Image (cartoon, rainbow, N blue to C red; front, side):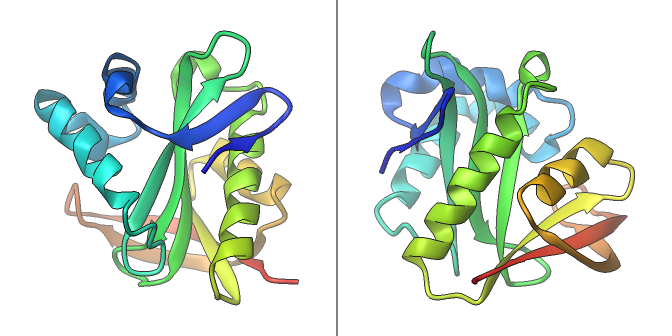
Length: 171
């Protein structure tokens, strides 16, 4: 699986990506990934193992976002079952230095289109905390429709957060 946008390559991680992958474990807004810093190789191998099933309905699939020109990692994007809602969800994160350039929109749209083309589902969701305006803008720019606000438990931190819940419907 390889998705290509005008500026990005979105592809499965491979074992030789470990050094680039480890950069993603330092993003403060992604505590679940930060918790894996001491197990970076194992965490990368877990993602690689998920490609054998490619199950975004009951599992998760996460791809690397790579700058087409320099081939360096700028983030990760994927889709998988939301812990609380048990619906397929788009997920993405970018290195701080890669933000504000439209990469998240390009990557999220490419994976949304891939998911809708390859899986039998009426919609895919997107969630963002109410204070995460940039992530809300990504979803809105990818034509996700705002549905409502909800309070959800984030299992990895055991904290409840107010989130905005969006859906992208099959046409």
